[in-house]
Amino acid sequence: MDPLSSISEELAEINGQIADIFRALSNGFQKLEKIKDVNRQSRQLEELTGKLRECKRLIKEFDREMKDMESRNDPDTNKMLNEKKQSMIKELNSYVALKKQYATNLENNKRVDLFDGPNEELHDDNVLLASSMTNQQLVDHGNQMMDETDQAIERGKKVVQDTINVGTETAAALKAQTEQMSRIVNELDSIHFSIKKASQMVKEIGRQVATDKCIMALLFLIVVGVIAIIIVKLVNPSNKDIRDIPGLAPPAPSRRLLWNPNQETS
Image (cartoon, rainbow, N blue to C red; front, side, top):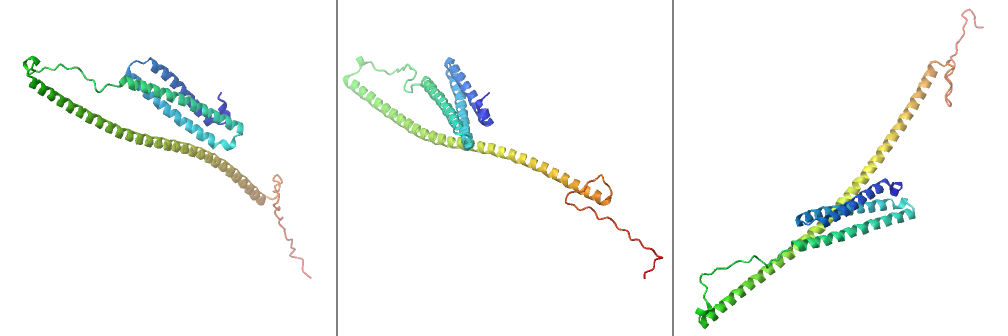
C-alpha cells in the first residue's frame, strides 16, 4: 500500500500514475536500443517524448497539491513529500537527458551531405583534345573553365547564405512557438487543477446541503409532532395517556353554572 494514501488519496493517485510512466519510459528506452530502422526509432522517440511531457505535467500537479495541503501537514510530512518530489524530478531529468542523446544520434544517422551528389558521366561531343589545340586555345579554355568555376562558387555561396538565413528564421520561429506552447501547457495545467478543486468544492457543498436537508426534515417532523400533541390535548383534555408538554399550561376545565329556576333571589 502506498504510504502517501494515509496523507492524501490524490497524492497517492498522482504518485501511482508517475510510477507507471517511469516504468513505461524504462521499457521504451530499452526497446529503442534494439530498433535498427531509423523511421521506427523516430516514432518510438516521439512516443517517449509524449510520456515525458505527461510525466512533467503530473509532477507539477503533485507539487501544487503538496503546497495546497502544506499548512495542514506536520514538518516531517512536508519534508518527506518534498524529498519525494525532488526524487521524481531527478528521475525525469535523467530520462530527458537520455532522450536528447538518442535524438542526437538519430539526427546524425539521418544527416545527408548536401554537397555530395550522385556521380554523373558527362559526354561532350565537342571536347577538344589537348594535342590538337594551340597554346592560345588552351589558355582561353582554361580561363573559361576558371570563370565557370568562379560563377559556380558564387552560386554556392549564395545558396549557403540563403540556407543560413532560412535556418535562422526557422530557429527563431520554432523558439517562439516552443515558448508559446510552453505557456499554453502551463495554462492548461492551471485550468485542470482549478477544475479539480472546483469539483471537490461542489462535492463538499452537496454533502453539506444533504445534511442541512436532513436536519430540516427532522425539525419539521418534531414541530408537526408537537402541534399534533397540542391539538389532541385541546380536543380531548381528559385523555390521561397524553402527558402534558413541559412549558405548556394544561387547558382550563370547563365550568358549569347550576341555576335553580324555583329559587328566588332575596
